[in-house]
Length: 147
Image 1: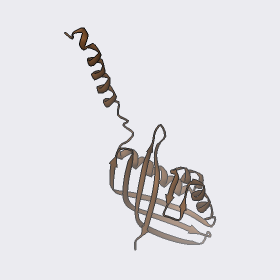
Image 2 (image 1 turned 90 degrees about the vertical axis):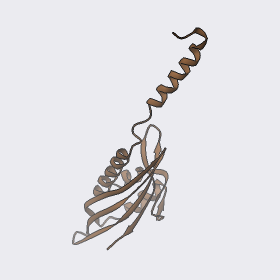
Image 3 (image 1 turned 90 degrees about the horizontal axis):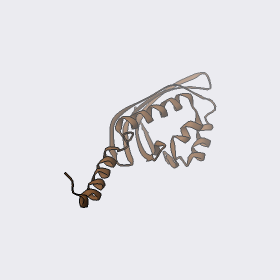
């Protein structure tokens, strides 16, 4: 039996244990992977708004565009491009608190001006940031074409 003087300590201990057990389960590697799959789908649709909103407000798209408005403007300039396929394959995800680094390879097939088909592939590194009550957002996306 717990003595009356120890009840506050006991309640504090139980509260602490409950808080630890309620850890946000959405901060998992599989949720980073799901966020990347959503990003792939936005690229497939060439949905500049959704792609830009996949980034943090100060997100960095390959040092070409920084910030959501800049990313959207950059992507909206590809009027003659239709993405036929987009796939990313993750090789590694390192998760640390509210951030994650995801590395892998991407494959993309595009139709340029409705006549020329190109196939590109490359390595990518996505730095993700967890935003409370919103989920995973890209802080920085770097790609490097490979042959």
